Length: 181
Image 1 (cartoon, rainbow, N blue to C red):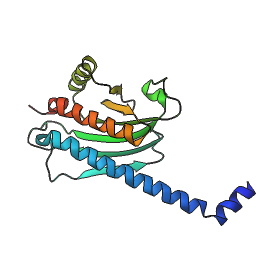
Image 2: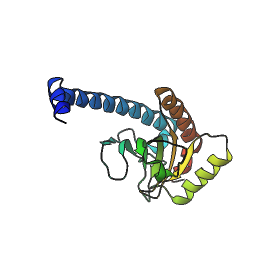
Image 3: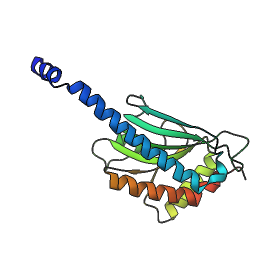
Image 4: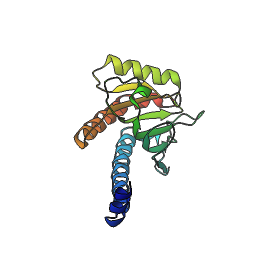
């Protein structure tokens, strides 16, 4: 242990690790911002262009191993007036058991979206249509709130980009169901 600490001090390991973490988080946030905007562009009537996003990164959230997420208020002219909804785009590191995934060794890297505050019947209808269709997305009842998560397990930038394209198409197809009309 003494040797590890001594070498770490001499080589500035701690500072280098913090720089790598910061760079990684900045790149994830930039990708999530693009993902969020692509989703908004598919259903612009659900969003007010003046609405700010809420960005959160947490390395010890208690409910996940780590999270990066953006919550975007759905306050557009076709958003439900009787309850608050938010588009949540995210990259979560989860224990595979939280999402009933026995096929994942290590952490589940769930890149996806959910509509926080959505009517459960609407969520279930979207899940049913997703399963009936030709979507390779996974769905899960979120163990930390009541809304369904639509996601893909990713392990590379190529997989993340492919997941993003499919998730945007999915929201283009089904996002209108979350309107107040």
